[in-house]
Image (cartoon, one colour):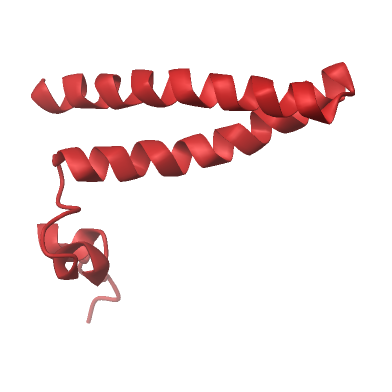
Length: 89
């Protein structure tokens, strides 16, 4: 008898968990809303990172927040466009 396990193959509906299929199709692969959710989640993480780095460099919390917000707006739009281009490829 073999101890080898058969690899589990996930379907498109189970790959991201049940949340994607139960969201009414809003977060299915390749949709604009999924790309937007992904971009916004990433930007929140990067906003915090940018503010912490700017605070360490400038020592001024106000300036650090301004830098973080400005970078977030520009980079969110850029990332969303980049994601849409890749979905078309």
